[in-house]
Amino acid sequence: MQYQFTVEGMTCGHCERAVVHAVREVDTEAVVQVDLATKQVTVESDAAREAIANAIQEEGYKVVA
Image (tube, rainbow, N blue to C red; front, side, top):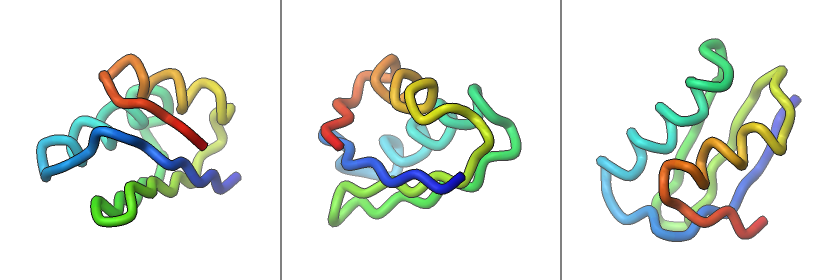
């Protein structure tokens, strides 16, 4: 499945790495693309959308969509 998230609070490369790491904690095979300019995170994963969103939020970022 491919999911699209709008994630508030991402401002730099460290933020990008933290979000990617959080997603890969849920699914090590996930393909993650982060666009800091638009705050968009695209994830291709077999994991549940809610599990991915929760992992990103536990990292300290707000998933708004």
